[in-house]
Length: 548
Image (cartoon, rainbow, N blue to C red; front, side):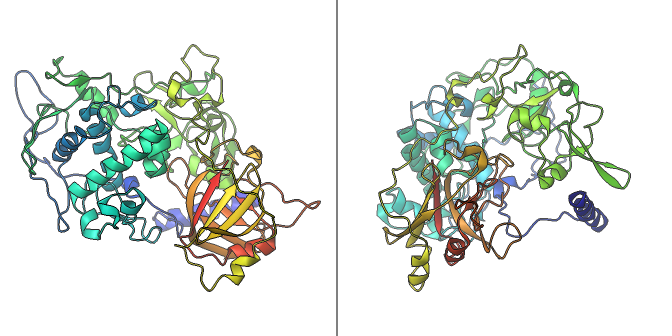
């Protein structure tokens, strides 16, 4: 009741203020910010006897900008340059195990170029001057694919010398480096999700690119900006970014024979998995795949078919069912901050419910790596993508060296010379161990405990409310607190995000011993209060690796 009252007060304040409140220190990715283009606005749509659509004539070629003073990059010129570079890349002809999800079925340069072009949209909205992850990495993230200066050293590029800011803001340098990083990570893991997902947040969070029915191939390119001729210029629906609206537009067009030399695909399909529950199949309100070709996302203020809290007069009422009568109008945002997950979340194992415009049903996205969590009792195919099997497992974990567990007092002793660059932390969930390294050498190790839904260290986590400590590489954020009410004497936030890119509040924090042991958590890493106070002394930006 107290929690409900607090939530009601918070929401009331937000509604009266007429503003959207964003908590401080939450990382907002550039890919999560909607952009609207004015190109073609007010122009007369193209009129022909064969092809008619809502879009103005597509420009055959726009100059591609480049260099440190440039700004927005033309999408099709980017695609053409990527296609040309990929012809001599290790990726040419390479099809990773999960390639089909990303439109890679033959490994052609055109397929990889489409994937990378869409990824650039997510990372920078095709803006060469985009700067992100400010303060999280040395030199931040820059340019089309949001690369950092040290990438040159880590991936042996640029002669092993750090990239300059001007280099990263140069389109040619940025895209070449992005291809090289994909070559290193994807071919090593045989997976885009497990490989590229280590570097690019959207891939890690489950993003997949829009896959057109025909992948346009660059047929003419002389290596200079603004000279590419791209097939598919007569697409009457080219300006539509919403996949649903684009699909409806394409249905209305006469059947087109694909251009010679182009790869043909069946468009990416949404196949809801209904889990045998007939109540929420017909609900017209759920997370909608609207205006977001990167996949289902949470729309906090959108009514959903998930169970959750709903305003009833001047109070909040929780409805636990997934039926279309009660749950329509429930706020998933209110449900999340209350810590209560509804039954649709239980089916999908994540906030990835979608509205399928073809069947008019609400269900889970089969592209979710967690779709195998519930066995379907309906006639729908369930988990049909073989590449998803085992995706919850960490592919590489290094065995931790033998050593004596003491505590983290060495952090205080070494504090005068500790920096975020020379210090790192390894947390092994299976061994319940934290090791602190300085200049590559272990300086201390201690006991920990982790999320109660994966105490043995088998799962990757990463979904809001899963009570699993997520695996991956993170950094210490400036979300540091002292004397928290239920998390010990120190709380040190990590940069972990959920499947929608939202800051989760995962942290290393303290706690009292119970029967001589540390209690499990709802996803954080618990240490003793003494160790938490020492860990608090590590600088913001220190790298933290969590493994199984």
